[in-house]
Amino acid sequence: MKRASLVWLVLLLSISLLGSGTAIGRAQPPDGQGTPEPFPFSDRYPAEVVLEVPGDTATLVRLDIIVDQVRPLDETHLFPRPGSRFEPLVATVYINSGESQRLGQAGLVARPIPNESLRALRQYGPGTDQPSGWPTFDQWVARMQAIATAHPTLVRMVSIGQSVQGRQLWALKITDNPDVEEDEPEFRYISTMHGNEPVGAELTLRLADLLTDNYGTDPALTALVDGTEIWLWPIYNPDGYTAGSRWNAHGVDLNRDFPDRVTDPVDDPAGREPETQAFMNFEYAHSVTMGANYHTGALVVNYPWDSVPQPPDYAPDDALYYLFSVGYASRNPQIWNGGFPNGVSRGWEWYIIRGGLQDWAYYWHNEHHVTIEVSSQQPPPYSQMDTYWNNNRDAMLWWMGQALTGVRGLVTDSATGAPLDGTVDVLEVSKPLRTDPAVGDYHRMLLPGTYAVRCSADGYLDQTWTVQVADGPATVRNCAMVSESQPTMHVGGIKIRYQAKGAGKYVVSGSVRIFNESHQLLPGAAVSAQWNLPDGSHQNQQALTNANGLAAFRVKTTQIGAFQVCVTDVTKSGYVYDPAQNHETCHSLIVP
Image (cartoon, rainbow, N blue to C red; front, side, top):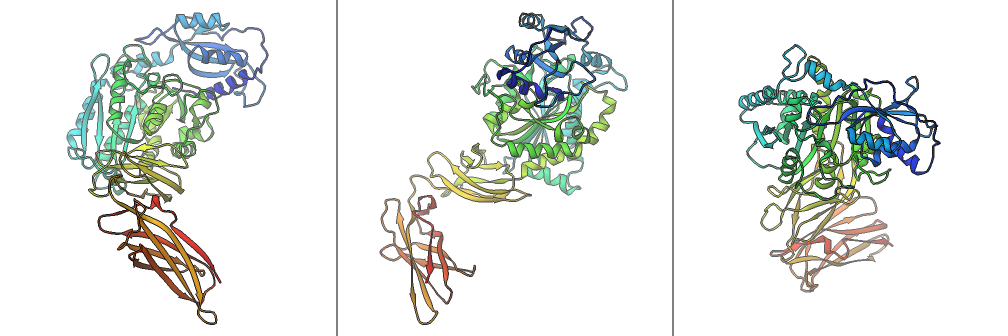
């Protein structure tokens, strides 16, 4: 979980590195309960620390303290704006006795405060059997089973592994052909990585009901199911949920347990928690296009990067992340008015975490993943779930639909049509993604615009092409890859000349030479060409290359100005046209 006031932690850290701020007399935290209240499975408890100077913020980062919230020490003040004079702050942190001692050695005093989340779970957590009480884990499982049983042609209930205490890590797979690999993006919603944050569990299962109950009658919902492979994980941390704890049964924060591009830059599940390993192994076997994980404790859509070596540091898809995140937030009135500009934040602008899911999914696996905080309570009473569903339903559907935008296609062998394990890279973004080798499909979300896209696969010639992406359904651009061992041909050169044929009359001639991969002239190739004329009109022509590998084209005209001839295609039995090897594809001439 994250909270709005923490947006300044990294900014204050950067200030401290510049040496700003003047120490003042050491203050004490506001009065708290004074007795540590740790969650089950861990000795960490909530505490407050006064940050008197910017360097105190740097100390929290250096000691890797889990921070939950920061607010002004003087509660009558608003949180300081960037560039304003520093004033003392109070940070809410999760610490144990050893971390408390290290903070003290660094000159910071940590005072325990009531664990409001733990108290709420004791009041209306799983199994409390009262109107506001949350379901037990077994009741969640039964609900998932009921959905799968009621919709056997759309739903599969899948276990991807087990928790520390042996509970199954259940997910629902929803799509029109759940047992068939298809050309469609994979999408997922995840909830309850922290066991005390279960609101997303209810949201994901209500979404499952909405999609399956309305399949075949609601065109928009049917299209989502038909066009997407949807995965829903309501309870990522079942042990923590059952015990009413933020942590898993080993006392580990599962949203700090992934490889980290800054501090743990090896994508390897070895040595990590069983829940993390199961999730990572699922990712290795799939090509997930887009997703989100639900948390509580604030109201914001948080996007990469969470972990940075030194701010500022922006993700390659930063503009896309921002606009998509605003798209979710603007459809959720709670988040839109939750205290963040436009309801969104880059992770590091809020506060740095190491080992988070969203950075791992994006950095190593090109999944457009965010963290969505949907409640300031941890947790709210279960009786309030109608309100949370109403506030999130439209945003959840909109977010899913974005997986079907941008550019998509199949990467295949041009001779056999077989799918390839290839790479597609948008050169303006420089964040390559791999195809799904089972089908050869790729799905690359992009904002509207013009992009250069390169397709690669081992043993094949690279292809680079220009694609126009519009606002709406994804542009389809298939990539038929040419084997490096397959004979190829290309344009070796183009010439244009003109002759005057009387007053105001001209003949403009073009010649195109075609070569094979050994740079030998190639006769008998069918060359398609387009003339672009001065008045903006076009003429398409086709000609065969002669014994000298030359194809000739001409137009009779009375126009003057810029003439251009462009090769649009070359065909010949037994050969593949490889435009990447062209010496030129178009040639121009001014007449007269």
